[in-house]
Image 1 (cartoon, helix red, strand yellow):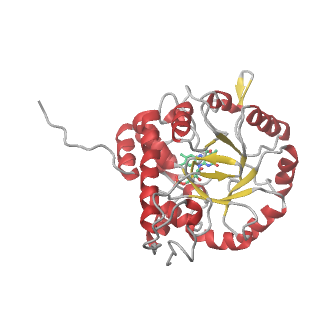
Image 2: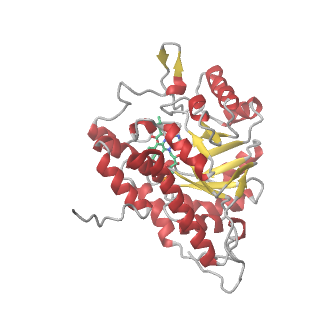
Image 3: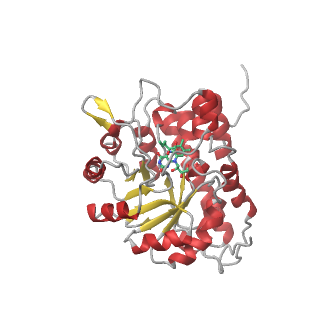
Length: 352
Ligand SMILES: Cc1cc2nc3c(=O)[nH]c(=O)nc-3n(C[C@H](O)[C@H](O)[C@H](O)COP(=O)(O)O)c2cc1C
Ligand SMILES: CCCCC(=O)C(=O)O
């Protein structure tokens, strides 16, 4: 008998290693990569490493409660699943496996428009969903996607605004990976016998946000805002929430780290709408830092894909439970009894 001394993945980083071992190298590169020199990918994580927490002591509040509500949607913790495309590349069943893990953890999954399983079939898992949209120049088609998301029970619409073009992905160029393999397709883009190509249009503008605003009563979020003036314009256009994000460093390389932009966006918005952040969140302490700098919640992209690629639903469940345990521990050690208590000046006062 041989003794297996490997403990299995104990943190998100271990899951990345496990996923890399399992995935086709070109598919691993698609998930892991960023644009060009991947400086923004590195900057997102570095920004979290650079900020240090200042905990409070002797507050005696007992164990923290992690529950929260984000734009009317209750969640077991302030961690959402960021929208990521192509889950069937990571695991044969794809998005429904991810969605079941999100449902078991009680967290919100932002389903990607470019999913490899339709929004209706993802919703059939019973998960709490928001829907991510790349507005298409064909407004009638865009509207049909919004109606499908509403009918499927999605509770918010997340419009990605950092993609007036596709970022330059050089790992993809080297691997010759530019499209899904022939057995997979973007299920929401199917129309009769054919699958529509997604259009990332440089013509997208505030006028489109106005149109979407009048198209739906769902809470509307913009994903991919880094500039305080854009955050202010978003509020003026009736947007209900903002996701401070650089698309995980996959669009404009050398774009500023999300965490570094959060304070300026928070100041511009001044509490008028909730802020979310994604990019580089890998630890419970990262979540605390984002909360302290003004976020109501964070979203995680690649960590979920590493869990999915490693062990399907069970892998995503494990990643979410690791993040939950780490967040609970970090809040306790900061002297906080809940996510809402973490503020810049009082608790976990962040030193740059
Ligand atoms: C493989 C992959 C696919 C993605 N697909 C989408 C997408 O379809 N729509 C979108 O708005 N963002 C997409 N994103 C960006 C994520 O929503 C999120 O902004 C980013 O992954 C956060 O950074 P993190 O991976 O460091 O957590 C994708 C990210 C990755 C890694
Ligand atoms: C056409 C966009 C591809 C999905 C995406 O957003 C990403 O890979 O980052």
